Length: 361
Image (cartoon, rainbow, N blue to C red; front, side, top):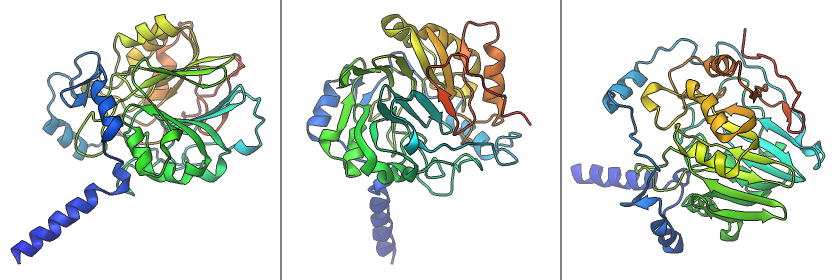
């Protein structure tokens, strides 16, 4: 009887471990390339600076207990959040605009090409359905709403940035995937052809179309979909088009790399930067509100779109706090902050467009 139970448990563990939601494994030329990366040491990818998972003075047990007993006020909105929805298929290809879709998902068009970044449209940001659910009113775009996507850009493989269900549904519409080194294994597991996947190490670049170049740049974060951390790379990107230069930030704690990127590639017309799901305990892997303006200034960005907020409760702060703090902290700075309603249209050519404080009651 005991042996039978053990066999069943082992079989169940193997079944769960190899579920497609967890993505691929690493072998062959991909693994050889990963091991040759200057950012790969001792069997894992590394940050440029020493990066503890937790800030000094905190323990994992303490963090887990606080998470389980968390009673943060207004962590989840009490009512449905406002949103808008435009018909993406009817937008002229020549129209340069961006649509933020909550958290770190956004669609944009530039110079005739269509881009989609870190899409999560399944209603949750977790491998377990029904957990880490999207706020009411924030899930307004789905796979059927999109035209053909020229380039899907993935910053890293965490579940709130790379969603299996979303990617599988969007697959017929995606022409090319651009991702960090190792992340392509997930896409191959999910049925993408190898030639449709471009994997980049930090400071590698690729001409993805005539007049369009993308460069993978460092971030200070981590990765992992199963139990092992940092077995794929995490990345930010510099995208240069015929008329614009865009910084796609992904997730990152504050560090010297922002200034280096600004000096090497700036100034930027737009920077999309995380501003949400922060905590002093995670200061090395997520940007704190008081650091946000420093990041934008280091990058030499003219316009900034704050993301990584407004859709999922992943940290111990009120859902609206990231918007309040960004509105306060950039006062007096030569910096334009875009705070669009989820699903609305941001004109990438119009520096005079204004935005309401939609998060206020």
